[in-house]
Every structure is written in structure tokens, then in C-alpha cells.
Length: 188
Length: 254
Image (cartoon, rainbow over the protein chains, first blue to last red):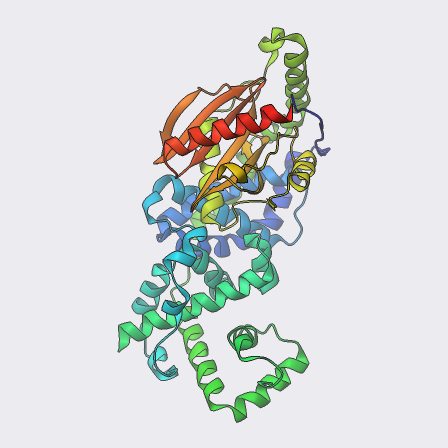
């Protein structure tokens, strides 16, 4: 057998009061952020509340091992993981896996045709923007939402999705190009 | 600016400028470029319009009721539930060790298996695929993957590369059953990924054989004190082929 290494991190036991205080400081200030991200990942405000409730429970458990550094991306990382688990369980058909993206969305499709037209994009109504965002596949949608709606920096997005900053940048660029393709197609 | 950066960098540069991620010198160069390069300015204006459109979307705010419910969670959640984990881990480990040495006499002491360990593994497999990071450590080199596992899980799994059998190793990942981290190898088969988790029998008593959850093929088999669980969207026959290749390779290694 292969049990060679037996290591586990020593965990200080956190009292109930401390865990409650850490939760109030670390998670509660970012409930709006978590709800916004979960809403765009699941597609519904009601489902977002379920995801965020599960997120809070997971965060609470994690905080019993001690405080978390850089709270906002930490909370959003738990939110997106919880949302993905939720989607895998409840909407498996709606998922496009990141590994398939290169085949599902060839780079050439992500090139908007025609000249840039800021006035045209500015004229898009909320319903059109929302529909275009909802049609983005998850790996693109999550970075765009974290950047534009949660207002995270590249570094924080990288922490939240557990990917290098280069990946964050290329996914953001791709996400925006796809949005422009959708919106131009919708408006023209 | 445009001279400083090759054209292929332009999209990323535009993004970084838009997102306020350029340093001061680059911002100045970019602003100069905007005044002299009409095409760049038009692209930039379009991206700004898109940003305004996204930021004008209705905001999701926690209702007072929801916020109060979440705050109450911290008070209601029994802290003992987690504080207990470190206490059972050593017992689980000791039991696991004793199981090997004592031939299973200690099975009565084994901790309760958490519910649906197979579901947990399937969820981890699916999440890894959705998130675009199928592995925590990416390497086809077993001498990289194995030591990484040694520092992240309680047991150091058998790591083999099955590239010669058509299943190249692409890395490893830690999945979690209940509170126990288990090592999972990730192989590629054509366009499919196969997760192969190595679960100590003391952690979960998994049913052996072929099954299917959420449309994913699953094959489970035992080897000594561990159970292997292969999960993939590939055809069930491929998992049988993987099992044969894995057993051959680990047999050779003994």
C-alpha cells in the first residue's frame, strides 16, 4: 500500500464567538457581491440565494480553521465553486466546459465584423445586454461579471477563479469580443 | 505606444487600459496613442460603451430579510461539527493503518462514511471541468505529481503515466469526500478527461463495478486497501481499458 505520508495541518479550534465575528467581518460585507455573481452564474435571483446560503455555510466552516486573507475574492471563489456544483447538479445540460471552449467557440467567431461602433453599442437596451451576457459560456461570463459588476482587479479575479492573470486577461478580452459580436448582430 | 507593442498585444493592452491595470508610464503612452490612432480610439470607445451597458444592468442586492438570515447562520451553525474533524482524522488514519497491518480487525472503529461519497467525486469531476482547471498540479511527469500529492493528501497515491496505452497523464487534483482529501489523477483520452480517484476503503465503502451518474460513466475497482474510482464522459469501455492499463502499469511497478 501507498500510505507513506501522513500530514495534516494543525487546526486551532476557533470558538463559536470568534467564528461568528470572523463571519461578520469576512463574509457579510460581500453578500451583495456574492449574490450578483451567483445570479449571473445561475441565471436567476432565487437560485442565487440558494447558492449564497450554501456559500455562507461553507465559508463559516472554513473560517473555523482561522481567518481568511483578502476576503472579497475569497468569498467569491467559494461562491463560484458552490455555483458550479449547483449547476452540475441542477442544470447539467446548460454547461459548456472550459476545456471544450476552444472547440465550441473558434477564435474567428469571436471577431466582431465591421468597424467598431460605440454609438450602436451604447444604444443597446438592458434586455439585449442581459441576453448577450447570459449567452456567454461560464468561463467567460464569470470573469466579465467579476470585472464589470463586482469590480474586482485582475489579481483578485485570478485569486477567485484560481487561474493565472494571463488567463484572466485573455478570457476577459474574449468575453468582451463575444459580447460585441452578439450586440452588433442583435442591433444591426 | 503602438510601436512599442506588437499588434497582437493590442487587444490585451486595450483591456488593461480600460480596466485601469496599466502603470502610469503605460497610461501616458496609451493616452497619446488614443489621440493619434483613430482606430484604437474607436475600439476603446466601443469597449467603454459596452462597460456602461454592463454596469447599467439591474443590481442584485441582498434583501434585509436575506441578510438577516445569513447573519443568523453564524449563530446557529454548530461549531462542533467542524471542530470534531481534526479529532476524527487521526482516528481515521490510525484505523486505516491498522486495517493494513491488522487485516481489517479494526473495521468497527472506522469512522462513519459521509453520505454519497460517489456523488462528491462526481461533483468534483464536473466542477473541475466547468472551471477550466481540471488539475491542481499539471504535469505528465510522475515524479512531479507524486510528491505534490504527498504534501496535499493523507496518502501518496500510485502515479503512473499511461501515455503508451493512449491515456496520457495530465496532472493531479485533490478531491474531497466529506472532510477527507483524496488524491485524484487526471488522464486524457482523445478529447475526454478521465478522473481517477484513489479512495482508502476506510474512508468510504464504495460499490464496485460500472455505473453512471449524471450521464458520466463510472468504473470502480479495488486494489488492496484502496478503491479506485474512474469518472469520465468517455464511453464505459474506455474506462475498462484504462483500468487494464493502470493495473498493468502498477503491477509492473511492484
